[in-house]
Length: 357
Image (cartoon, rainbow, N blue to C red):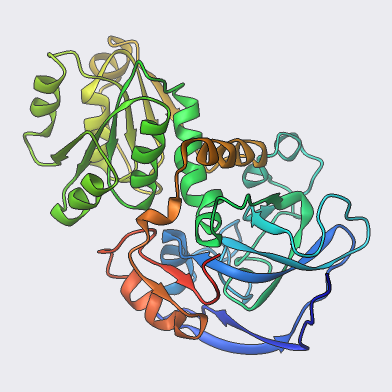
């Protein structure tokens, strides 16, 4: 199979100030250990808003933006293969882990490229050209095969959104014996509900927004609760005064994190997934005396991403079920405008410009 690749392509950059800039540039060529992908789908992430779209807030760290094509949640089809590539061929459907690490540090050897601290670390859409384009070059070390059961839209949400939720559930060893409360029903929170149910757990979805709770009902949460002042009391009533085995915070808020600690039962697990924010609490009554295990969890590994893909296939789960808005590539500016309202699904929206499958 041979694909005709044009010389030029369009892509989207984020210059800051709530703007999207469309650019035209040469289609890149894959180097050693790389493939060229025809982009089929990409989804937007809350970090795009926080660190790039509104303002370039990180000037020197891992979240710095180097004026590249944006987007770090890609899914596409291989159309060219570079030298040294053995496990991918033209026509293969691919999901991409959103960061390429140095490849030799301890974290990279574990597949957690996200944790790489070396200067070679580069994230798609941050320090190297990313998903919001017609074509993208990817290192095969960051690529996994996308099975036919899953659409390209499904694939775009695996590494960052669903991968983050899955890693948190793994950290807490969630099983069918657990009742899992998920604080915050944004895209990662919704993913946590879907995957916790797939692992056999009973689920409680909590949010302060009625529209988010309605989304939680639609994806199958066993219980939904408004995150008001009565939330902790209501959870204790539901659990016979014991609390939940696992509480996962996806809100990133101080009060959300604190309430997770409050509703966790004796010997329970609490996982903090939500970025930013702070939390202050008294360790003795909330942590020590309850013998809680508190986990901080950040994204996932390439190996666990592959396991997640297998789970999605076995359980017949489509991550794209939480998409609420779709836009073609040339309307990425409109996508970000709606995304920034914070009132939509999957990291606010999914940007789609090609075929769904």
